[in-house]
Length: 378
Ligand code: UDP
Image (tube, rainbow, N blue to C red; front, top):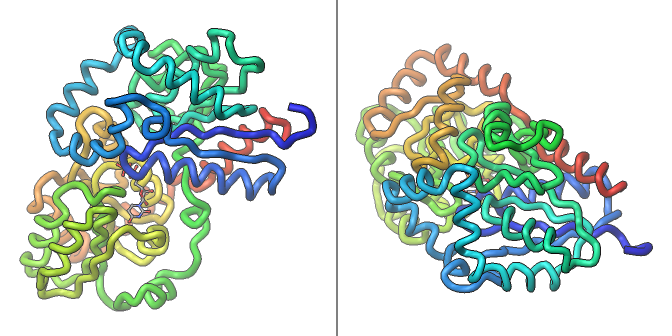
């Protein structure tokens, strides 16, 4: 593209908070590594150009995942290389034209797909030969272990995966080993480099200093049994502080604000300060979202997982259990039991903190940025 700065097109979608956060983290790391020697653009490919019903997916997502059994079933039915191909082929009449238009309207030197549905359709358009110069195509896989077959299309130039377990899965889907790199789960720089000590951050956030603090988060959309869990903790007789983040779920935020928990409790909507909240807390109680888990590990913060999306997030639970960085606690009573153990026997929590330190990959976004930079000659 002449003397122009290389242009990178990121394909993501606001189905959950994770794809947007991951994309923003990679762009941040690119600027930290390579200044302004390139330009970027983020396109919500499901919202922007896709036809019905796909353009409704970002709006439907919080509702769809409320039917976890159906979600899990559709994940399982569609998972598998041939089945994934067949699904894309059957959808082609609907999405082919929209995908082609999107690629034509957003010329780029590199496409980075940060969503499983942004792979095959785009690679098909690029392989059809209508595009003058085929851009590099990299996928950044953001499911830690149970990565769906749709992520892996052998026509991609490179597939960057978060864990060795995800690499094994990619190999099983016939991705050639030379196209795979284990880089970690992308994280904002603020997660990698803390902006203060625990004491300083509690002061900054207006949180009490001398009590155990549990942080409750349900992904970007405030999903999972946040309210029931907070109430069970408040009624357990344990003395601790609760910081509850309802994300974009306004209704839940209003409900939580109306409750008198009887213990110190702080309710917030969507916050940009998640890395600070994590460094200020003693435990994170959350659903098994990959972004949140990776951020928690980087903050050396033990995890209690109270919910997961069947299929897609099963592997995240396995990962946390196998690395002993947290526990799976699907009922509020399990959450309270784990909290009681960690509060009354601090060394048991400290051991989990050490495990988090061991497996954290704070360099992930920088790793991804360097690989992109190398490909584009930045
Ligand atoms: N998040 C945030 N502020 C909030 C709630 C969530 O910045 O108030 C971020 C969180 O730190 C994480 C992302 O949103 O980076 C959620 O991603 P995850 O993969 O955990 O779950 P998803 O929402 O995609 O299901």
